[in-house]
Image: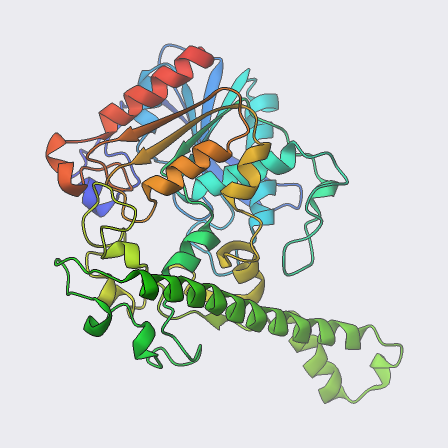
Length: 426
């Protein structure tokens, strides 16, 4: 098979480079209970089919070639790299639909493939996703989430959510909405103008402690307290905009249900039907503004200045690319709102009681050591462990001030496979 380029980790930080050509790779296409289509690749060792499989998924990222897969297969496990219906698309993403995708994946592994044990690997945004899934799966029907935050289907009480047997929380978000709220630029004063700004709240203003990277910035306690409060207020402001748009669409649907709707003028009927159908896409500007990126005295770790997106977040804050940049109102509330989304690890992990391993990267620039410790404390498992990988960035590549330790992935996977083997023999 073709050999991956030497710099593949820089180009494709989530992917493995090469895998033994003898490893069996089975393409899989699945349909959720609402007929949403997802895909994945099931990898099994050359030695035969194991008893235990590891399923890994992310809300929107390509995980069918996740970097951990060759290590799992070499250790004797099967691995299912699973991609949801929202692959490379978070603009319309409902986390509640993602749970239906995971249910289809776990059901396939258990019922069709016959695996005895299933380990969930929640890496990055997959951590909060699997936490939400397992918490809902272990909640009795009738007590589950009945609708996404913006309303509408799915009602999780109406669906079967099969459970897994173990959980690895790897460099995991406290929730995608929680992460986004921590890096919303508090200085934004007009959601329609990316340059409308309050200089007193601008973390990229030298008067507030900013220094151009790679120099380290330093923010006062008073600035940080005010900044965090205004970030939360901005999130609430965007939530209110989203709910207003949803209410307008609901008015269109209500008009269509009126008894005299068919008798109304054609232009009025057409407007109501179109308004009921079409969402207002929201643009969320400036989402690379977490003071932790630049002030390394906040939640100290091995990280260096910058974010996982770029070493100059002061410039990335204004770039076209960003977390939750273009979203429907429903997707904002379900996925990207730190206030409204139900996919929060702090809320869901206490309900997850299967054996759990929580792992952090000491050089991670977006998931901090305090996040990892909080996840461990929040876990409801009686069998739970925590580990930190030195010299590793968010993608478990060499990074931070101890990058000289070399590739962290073999060290990481030694921890993961040992933990899994002790509890779930391949």
